[in-house]
Image (tube, rainbow, N blue to C red):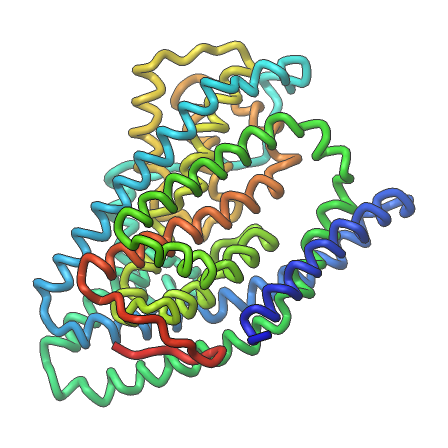
Length: 419
């Protein structure tokens, strides 16, 4: 068994053991809070290690990729194709969420569990207006942007830096080579950090089940089942779109990213899977300069699972309170979410933050978020895994359009193929 597959197996074992140990702890411990809090520290350390990697990895790979493209027109062409695909995928995700929530009407079943309309959810509403979004794109300081892991700001700075390096040609060659070496080093560091992944997955799942109990899954079973059915349909839609462009290679792609998908699902974090997703795409045959360009942008613009959840959850809360949203209101809500969902990938519980902002705009009680908070971790697991699938397929399709998709070449763990 090769290393990536062995790691995937260990992560799956950690997930299963976490469910079992968490259930036992919930049933046997009088106070599960200290137990859950202690285990949560393991997951927190792992996620901090991953975040430690992301800024230098995104910066180095993106700058090297752009510098080796050399032509600003080529960067613009690939960027236009990338954003065009992300817009299309966003519309598909948001629309599917709306269709399913209106078809299933999960909110009707929870009307008797409603919190008081004046209750507070503890989630600060946050959304970006068009003006704020544009300003937010540009970092006041790249050091500050990297310190906060603002992926969108790092991407913008890297675009300018890479084009500047390309413009001065050979004078920048030593710097580009140094950043190329940095990318290799960060991927090797990723390999070391990933040894902790099975333990982090075990700790995360154990702590959640121990604290909330398996009963929370049963109480919201119908809602969660309908949402995960929606996730399955979204996966099928994305894979079908991938098949249109990639033919049978789409199934090879899914095999290559199954490890990162499982990691994102287990930790409920798309960020945790970023380095391994990049590595999997390169093993699949996507050239480094395309993968390192498209994937980080996707982490801000192409969160397919999160966007589907935003429409699904917002209308779900409206249904629970007996508020019927007209078709025009729902279409307008989609347009609002297309904007407010961008650029907040690094915000904790980002989907809830966006939903809180959307509820206020449509006079839906914010207290409805309390219906979701108890099971949000389990829903976030599906959202995170779907975000990885959507970005992987998008990156492969852009590579195919650009003629940058080559035959797959197996690589050692932690290695990277250059353009």
